[in-house]
Length: 354
Image (cartoon, rainbow, N blue to C red; front, side, top):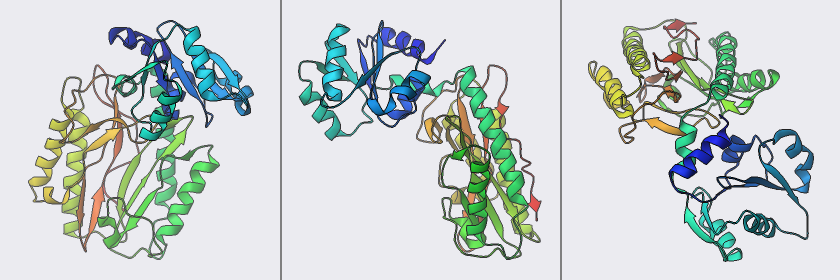
């Protein structure tokens, strides 16, 4: 079943007569269109993608299930939308709340002949459950992330700067036909105590923790992997922290089962870390949804009450960050299936001393 068909079924169940999609990721999800300017109008029986004349050929190549509507100046996008909403017999339109308040006010004022209602979580909930094709694309992005980590570990040695490793990660992904899913994190020594620290001109030193967090955006879908290494030699404190984070990560990956609640799995990670007094150094959530966006809908967190369902994909990334000492984070991408969790990233996660 296509994403458009899934959306229509959900609209019927939730009694949504028509929905206007303005978020570009949601537009791509429902239509396949990758351009930078478009809107999509969907009803239970009709659907159109409206874009401007710059994307005439792109739309024809990428969009097959929806009517393609091209407007050119002096006609406006709103005029085009009104024409096709009337053609489809629409009187009430649900709008995405992710658009800015100003944009919604401007559009609803220009199209005051229609009643506007909030679309709620209809698209968010659908995007949490990935189709077979989406899982296939996420797997390809994860395979590239594994290859990038294999490449990157060779660069980690005394005297190499965080900046240089960071830059090489970007080159690696671009050389392999991908974009960055996000700005890579390469932090060493005391910098590794910053969960989202930025690469600096600090040179790696013997005894450093080095955390590398990176991901590919390949064919519209993301991967996200983190590994932490030690330069030269690891102390007992290094090993104690690393081993406890690793145990939490492995157990939480295995716990991602249909029917369980994400916040309970997050709580398990904290309980494991608490055995060594390390839970106080773990301040972020255990994981987030992964898909077209590196932070896709869904999460594993104390604040997210979410039963797990087959087809969801999450990161699992417990971490410990100790000021003036350093930090450890280990992260994999996991697909929830009806049987058991499918781990999609495979680069070794036992402690590697380089």
